Image 1 (tube, rainbow, N blue to C red):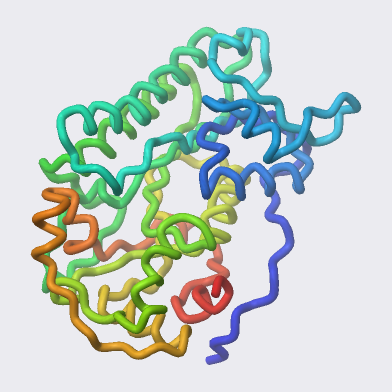
Image 2 (image 1 turned 135 degrees about the horizontal axis):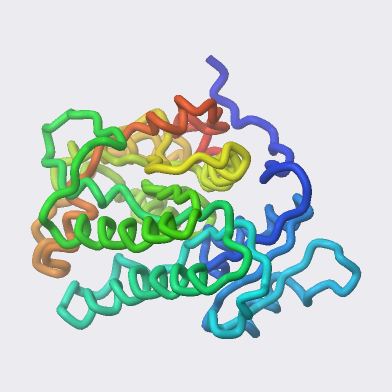
Length: 323
């Protein structure tokens, strides 16, 4: 098999004809790539953002001639009920990896996901023209913790667990699905580790670049990942099919953390093998350390069954395209 990265793909099609998209989280890592792909596809984009100035500087000023453009609003109250929105793509959410999950931090994470999604659904309830489709972000944290040594493959039918990250994703998805009461088809996208030149990958690769890559906390925890181009392609695919439900946004190949680091070290031409104990992360991060020391072996069963073709089904070409 040829491991070389494939050539750059053409801009994915989000459907026939021009439609009006409302995007939240547009200034984030995935959101920026999504908005630019929508514009290249000739779509009209409205961005809900706390910082319209930043968004406008990223995407340019709105067009006055009917060409693809970006309009920025800081509140759903700025969108009148007569405003036509055909598709909502909801990616907003404060960064989950960082400060300890104190009660205040958990409340902030819920507000940035659940409360904002509630605002979107409330606007849909008022809207004269209901969107046909809502794609809403979630994460494979929905499945909770899969201990090291458990090789069970998790598909979209696997249940959540009574832990915070699972509860957060479940509540986020429940808020999005309330749009179905207004005739909107809702698809929840459970993202794995998204690989790109922004996001978590540069931080993950740093110790490997320094020659310190190796098993972390044993290294047998599963690491389900996806290339950012497949994230955008998967969203475009769902916009074309118009199908709802839950979808795992992970590559077909899942690896353990040790395997992931070994492939990354090979791509970067760095040594591999120095192990790192997990207990310092437990001390520093508490329950949040589960994001790094435990994992989920997640399969994109529904995306594959619906006919989606991954550009990067394997890790080595995915990393080569980015480094």
